[in-house]
Every structure is written in structure tokens, then in C-alpha cells.
Amino acid sequence: MLPVSSALLSPGNIAPRALNMPGLRPFFLLGGDPRSLSWLRENAARLRAMGAVGLAVEVADSEALSRIRATAPDLVIVPVNGDDIAARLRISHYPVLVTATRLDQ
Image (tube, rainbow, N blue to C red; front, side):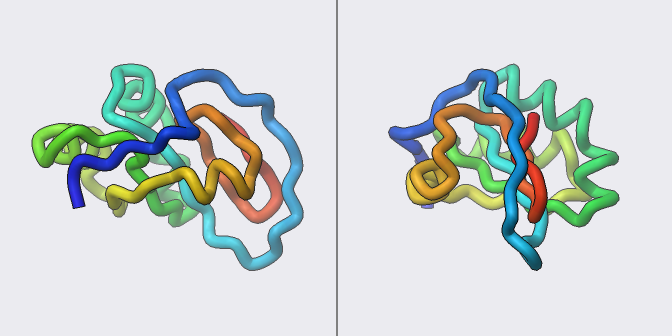
């Protein structure tokens, strides 16, 4: 299960864009880096309100996963390789929020 590393993804900015994926449950990608943790702290209430699930795509060990989860304890965050998602959505950076209608940071 750990470590999780996603070769196609790294911390950085993404260009927001519209999506058309009806019925998709909101989810977000993040890592254990300071930028991701800050983004998670700033957006936790919004993510919780929309029922978003977190996918930790870059996690070195169980301590790193615990730090991520402790940043937003009310959210479900699971470690997963994000390369397939990155390829399908044509993204190369995280953190990112994916909804049925939008890809955004």
C-alpha cells in the first residue's frame, strides 16, 4: 500500500477548465508536500460540504499519510497511484479538485 508515488504528477499549478462527467462524485488529488497540506487546510470545509473524497497520490510512508489525514480529519483520504487519473484528465500537477463539471485548484 505504501509508499505511493505517481510518476505523472507533481506539486504545481493547474489551469482550471470545464468538465462534462455527469454523476461523478467530487474527489481531489494531493500529496504530502507543504503546498498540498496548506491547500487541504484552506479547502477542507468546502471539500467536506461537497462530499469529496481525497486521493493521496504521493505518500512516502504511514507517518506522511497520518499527517495528511490529520490536516482534515473529517475527510476520507486514501493512498492511490494517480497516474491513470492524470493521463485520463490530462493533468500533471496537484493539489486539484475534480467535480462533474470542473477541474480546479
